[in-house]
Image (cartoon, rainbow, N blue to C red; front, side, top):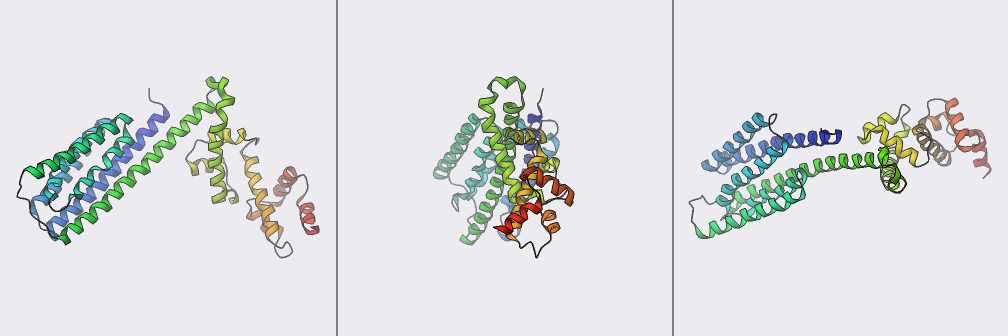
Length: 318
């Protein structure tokens, strides 16, 4: 039975495959148009457009019926073989065409276990060595291209691979976050691990709390009058119960207490930075996220032990 973590990771992987197909469709179309209109090479143009059609057509057919792992395994093998002809065709002009194979180990790292990273790395290396040996020992009637032509194709090739690698890294980060948050859930929230809670809770609680603090301080989310734990959950893409547990683990009674701490700190900072005779107290507490003075007075007295007026008087004395 799939857990919530597995379902979320599966969704991210399918999104990655979807966006990758869009990206590669654009890249293949661009190269196909280049070899049709800018660098005339009819065979290469038809080969690229054929690959574009095959990729899109098969994806539309299998995307809902096959598992994500089967699709990715099949695509890596077929795409590598598809690139083999391109690599041979350009070997005498530029060996950069094997750069298309570089994202394959990274894709294996995103989708599969570590052993597949090693397997597909060897697979890529074997393809490059095979391409070198064939080009050395056999002659093919591939068209030669000028340096300007090669410069154009190599530039677009590098930019395209940067885009592909960036896409893979982006989704790997999203998947890693799901895994981390699931681990936090297991370590902190699962009552079955209560005996080891004391020793294992702290690092995970600290890690999550540091992220919460970073987001709160950098984006100053507490200044939003209507800000609550649900908005922070949406901002960080983390379950609100994890946030609540992490905050309580750091000694705060609840999220509102933690939120008010940030607001009171902001008020004290603004009182120090501004001349209270030139700005109103209303400006100070509304800028910090309080909706009205009665709430501000109550929270300030609760957290500081003195009223705002008494605190202001103490500042003026000093």
